[in-house]
Image 1: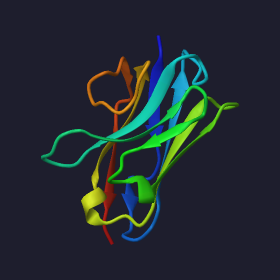
Image 2 (image 1 turned 90 degrees about the horizontal axis):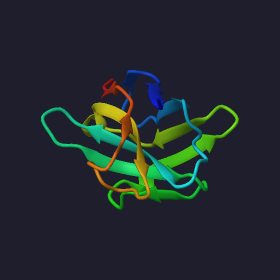
Image 3 (image 1 turned 90 degrees about the vertical axis):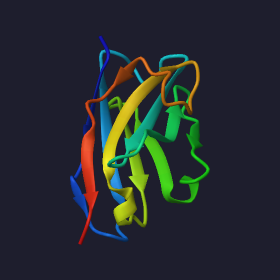
Image 4 (image 1 turned 135 degrees about the horizontal axis):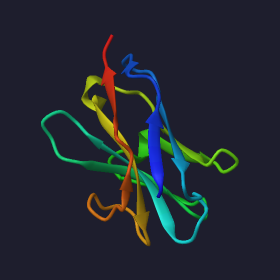
Length: 123
């Protein structure tokens, strides 16, 4: 059974960088052909795919967030990390990490999700 767990600060100040880590257990993030994504859901809105890191280490980003987003991984810890720079209150959302087999970029093709973590951007 694969489990994903998000961690990071729940409150970030405007203009700062949001950093979240997803720790994976029960499966390796380097296993072919899985993609590991960050997805968020602002209050009252739908799910938004932010970006993904592949089993190979390649990264993919949503065009609307690409200039502010970076995803990296630590294979020794079986973790992958999201960094979102220059945050504003509009980045307030529940942030999820999830695994998608064989592809990336959707909001419905995932087989495992973290429970989500609330991040609020406020001074």
